[in-house]
Length: 240
Image (cartoon, rainbow, N blue to C red; front, top):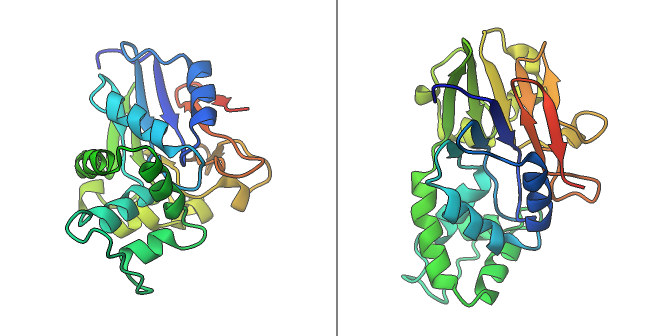
């Protein structure tokens, strides 16, 4: 982009369609002038994942919108990439991908059930498997001379993103718990770890002199929100 009016980032959505639409409409996104990054975890735990899935499919190729992969997309992919080949044969071994995705707390069963009720199960699963393969694990953006790193969960600030392992990028929590580990100059923006687990309140957190930003504000919690922030001004919008 030649000029970025707003550098917007959305935290985890987790299948909460109504909350997502509430905050998205408040932000009034303009892809012509805004650069928008979604940090992943579009699925699981929420009661209405199918409209979220359709919306992401519809907007994935939109100019100036970046959709990163979260660990819940990874679980979806690992659980369902053989769907159709093993129809009706759910592997419930404790370590199988589908058993882990269906485990209490993961929220995968809610998503799987909602997809089945949609009447478009095979079509939607196939479309999302292809989509997840296209989702990047990270984004690196420079605006006004400032470098920003976007990842779903965690990273090592001292190593290039392209050389970091997917387990850290999708599942880690080191920077969320210990933001002082970041001694470099880039601003690192994370989802994955709900701020409620670490800090009072339910707003995005700017930590370590603003160099680490936490955007997961517990979309699936009763007192949680889906949040969006303009990183250039620190303005925040949240779902009711």
